[in-house]
Length: 111
Image 1: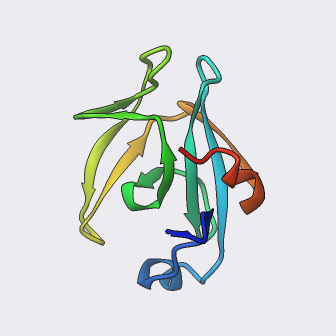
Image 2 (image 1 turned 45 degrees about the vertical axis):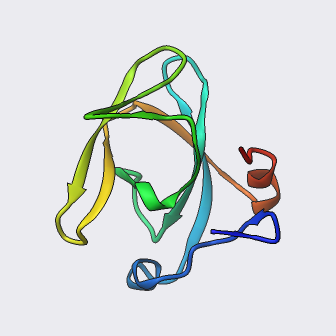
């Protein structure tokens, strides 16, 4: 969600179910190091899937599979997450690297 030309956390039922704790992650390709996007991670735990509605900035090529636009490495598979009926990318193990970043840093990566 964009507000006043800056990133803001999406606050909805999904965030509330996961305890209301969110952070921005900078996602890069583990293979070539290319910047793939900014993702809002809600709740604790590992990053196993990325919900499409939580990708604030994305360079990921998404078809049946999701891949890096630079090296074409497949990073995951597009799925419909049945528990919440939401489109997502199920990530392959060690396909992406991630780093927690501030909202200010996230805004530097706006498209």
